[in-house]
Image (cartoon, rainbow, N blue to C red; front, side, top):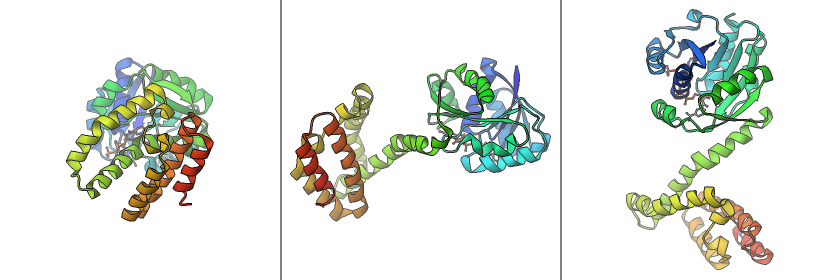
Length: 290
Ligand SMILES: NC(=O)c1ccc[n+]([C@@H]2O[C@H](COP(=O)([O-])OP(=O)(O)OC[C@H]3O[C@@H](n4cnc5c(N)ncnc54)[C@H](OP(=O)(O)O)[C@@H]3O)[C@@H](O)[C@H]2O)c1
C-alpha cells in the first residue's frame, strides 16, 4: 500500500484521510497543519497517522496531499520542495478547483509527479462529508502517471472522476461559484428586495422556500430552459420594463444584476421556443435600457 502524507488537514484533508484509511487505499503516515494540536485532532478524526509539528518531522512518502486553503498551496509546496523530502516519482497533488496543478511546479523541479483532483462538493463539516461523499464528481488534471494512482484512489471512496483542461481551471471553478455561492447571494438579493417591499426576512425566507426548492428540482429534472418561469419566459415586456425601473430606482447595482440575468433568461426562453424572435428582441431592448 502506498504511503500518504497530508499537509493541511481541515475539512477536506480529514474527510479524505479517513475514507482512504478505512478503505485501505493509502497508509496514512504524517499529518501537518499550522499547529501540532490541530494536526493531532486531524489524526484522531482520520483514525490513522501521526501528527507532526513541522515539515522537518515528516518522513518521506509515496504521495503528498496538499489540502491547505488555496493561498497556502504554493508556499507550502515551495517549502516542501526546498526541504529535500521529495524523491523522484513521489506524487504531489492538491484538491483546489480554482488553481491548476502547475502551481506545484516547485515539487516537479525536484522530480515529483504533480496533479490536482477537485471534488465538486461543499465540505461544510468533515464528518458529514464522509457520509455523503460517495457519488461526488471530481475533476482531475496533471501528470498522467500521477493520475494513474490518484484516479483509482478517489474512485475507491466513491468519487466519479473526470478530466479537466488545466488551463481552463479558473473558468471551470467559476461554474461552481455561480451555481453554489452565487445562488446564495441571489437569494440574499431576493430577501433584500422583499425587505424593501416591507416583508421581514424571516417571513420572506419561509415564503420563498417552496418556490426555490421546486425551481432547483425542476432545473435538474427537466433542464434550465424548461424550469424557467416568470415574465421573461411569458414575453411580458411591459412587466419587465416596469420591474427594471423599480429595481433600478431602489438600487443601481441590483438593476445591473436584473439586466444581466434577464438577458440570460431571454436566451434560454428563445432557445426553448417559448419566445419568438421579435419578442426576444423587444425584451433585449428593454433590458438594455433602449
Ligand atoms: N471546503 C470545501 O467545500 C472544498 C471543496 C473542494 C475543494 N476544497 C479545497 O480543499 C482545500 C482545503 O480546503 P478546506 O475547506 O479543507 O480548508 P480548511 O478546512 O480551512 O483546512 C485548511 C487546513 O490547512 C491547514 N493549513 C493552512 N495553512 C497551512 C500551512 N501553511 N501549512 C500547513 N497547513 C496549513 C489548516 O491548519 P489548521 O488546522 O492548523 O488551521 C487546516 O488544517 C482547498 O484547496 C480548497 O479549495 C475545498
